Length: 586
Ligand code: DGT
Ligand code: CA
Ligand code: CA
Ligand code: ZN
Image (cartoon, rainbow, N blue to C red; front, side, top):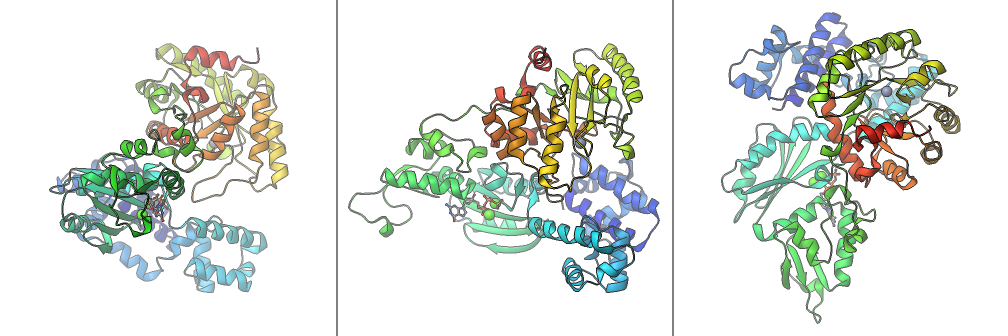
C-alpha cells in the first residue's frame, strides 16, 4: 500500500469525523498526519516493516500511528468501519464539493437523506435543497456548478499523484526475474497534467504469463481487471488503473512509440508512413511490397526496418526523435520530419524561483529559511512573494508590514551570501482592477507580482478588463497563476486569455507558469501562445514550505509541453540579465 493510499484513507476518516461533529483536535490530528505523510520520501510500509516508531514523525501521534499500522497489516481501519456504520462513507464525496462543508453535508443527510452526489443532484432538481435553512438559491447554484466540475474530473489523476501511486508497482515489475527493462509510456511519459491510466512496458523475451502474474500479485491491487500472456491490467486501491504490456526486445522501441501516444500523434505518424510505402505498428516499421494489400499482411510481415529502439522507428520514417512531451500532434510531426524541433527548456537551466511564501503571510518557514533552501538548490536569485493585505485571513502584508519586511530582507541579504533575495509581494488584483498596495511601495519593490484571489465568478468581459487594468500599472512585472484554476477542483475563471496575453506583450509584462501540480497555470497550450506572442514566461513554484520548491520540475514539464526554449523562460536568465529585464522600462 502506498503512502498516498494511506493518506487518502486517513483523510476519509477525518472527513467523516468532521461530518459527525467530532472534536476539532482529533480531526486536526488526522489532517496533520496526512500533511506529514504527503511529504515523506520513504514508504510507511517499509518503516512499519522495519519496526520503526511512527510517532517520531512530526504530527503523528500514538493513535494515528496505530491506525497506520493496522491499515498496513490488515488492509482496514476498525475505527473507520465503526464511523462509516453510523454515517455513509459516500458523504465524504459531498464534502469535497465546493460549497458543501461538513456541516452542510450533515444537514443534507439528516434532513433529505442525501448520501451521494447523485442524491444531491436529484434533490437540487426537486427544489428541496433550496428550502433548507442556510442554503438558499445562490448556494444551490454554486453546488450545482461544483457537481458539474466534479463529474468532469472524476477518473483522472493529477500527475504528481499518479507518479507516487505508480512507484511501488514499477519497482515490483522491475524486480521480476527475466525483466530487462521497465518503462512508463502513455500520458504519464508525455507529462500530461492529468493521467487517465498508467501504461507500463516490460522488456522480456518469451512467454510473458509469469511476468503478468507477478504484476497482478502486487500488494496494492484492489482488483485485477485482466491477466493474459502479454498484458495485464490492475486497479489500485486509489482507483488508479495500471496497464502492463510485456514486449520482446526486437519490438520494444516500436511498442514504446505506440503506447506513448498520443493517439493523435500516432495517427499523424502512421499517415506519413503510409505515404512512404511503410507500415508502423507496435511491433516495428515494415516496408510493404508494392503488389500486396497491407490488409492481407500479418502483424510482422514485410521487410523489418526498425523496432528495437524508438529513435530507430522515427529514423526509419525520416524523422528525428521528438521528445514525448511534444507528441500531441501540434506540429511536432512536421517539425521532426524537417529537423526543426525546438531545443526545449530543462530543469537544470532554471536559475531562480519568483513566487514563494514565508511566515510573513501563509508560508511555513521564515524568509531566511526559504532563502537558504533556494541557495541549496543552486538558485542565483529568488523573490519571496508574501500576500498583500486583501488576503486578510493569511495576514497579508499591509504597506507598513511590507516596509518592516524589507528590513528583514536586508538582514537576510547580509547573512546569506551567494543568492540574491529580491523585494517582492504577491499583490492582489482588487475587484476594480486596482492593486492592493500604494504606488510608493510598488515603486520600491524589485519584482511586482500580481494575481487574482477574490471575486472569481465575474463575467468574462469584466474579469478581462479587471486584469488588463491591473497589468497596465507601470510597475507590474509578472501576472501570477493567470487563470486561477485548481486542477480537478476549480475551473479557470472566465477570462479572455488571448486578449490578456496580447496585452502582456504590449506592456512588457511576463506571465507565470505556476509549477504547483494543483495549478499548472498557465497551462501548456497557453504558454505556447505566450511564446508565439513573445511574452516571457516565468516558472515559479508558489512554495509555502521548502519542500514545495521541488515542484519546479512539474512546471518545467508543462513549459516543455508548450514548446518553450530556454530563451522563452525568464528565470533561465543569469542574475545580471534578469536584473536588466527588471530595468527594461528604464
Ligand atoms: P490517458 O490514459 O487518458 O491519460 O491517455 P493515454 O495517452 O495514456 O491513452 P491510453 O492509456 O488510452 O493509451 C496509451 C497509448 O496507446 C496512447 O497514448 C496511444 C496508444 N493508443 C491507444 N489506443 C490507440 C488507438 O486506438 N490508436 C492509436 N494509434 N494509438 C492508440
Ligand atoms: Ca494511459
Ligand atoms: Ca491505458
Ligand atoms: Zn496566489
